[in-house]
Image 1 (cartoon, rainbow, N blue to C red):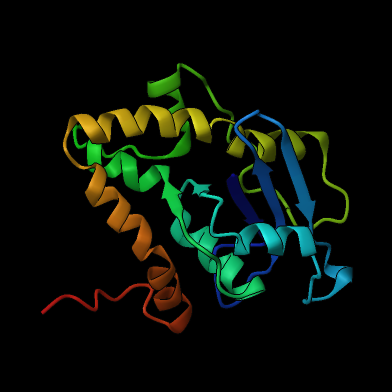
Image 2: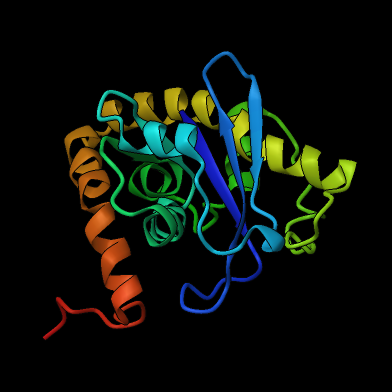
Length: 187
């Protein structure tokens, strides 16, 4: 299941979850909105069940942030995980451009608009442009994974990617615990 989140900002300590986008391999996208007036505790039983299911791979782009936001809101998330940004960094070493827009352009020949990226996701009613943007952020992830998996296999880095993906909940916990900018492995 491809998953993305939209928040009121990029601070894990301050900013709240506003939207979760989901897309299966069939391309059907679902948007789950969390309005401020509903308070900080969201029931979201179907989303919680999906996140807790160890038989569903959770597919992200920049999983580090999304997993941290989701763990903060809903508690631990069951692996397995996949992150197209990490996969890209492992195999597209010829570039420093690993954003979703760059991946879609190069690997799929698709131009994404990022115009709504920094819009107000905390509003109670999303605009059609916001809904379209949110859906496209998960729509292409399955196809990107296929392309990146082939590259990971070709370069002999598939197992390394799986280990990186397995570490994501720990990386998210470090971010939430205050070690976001510190390399705890450094000398």
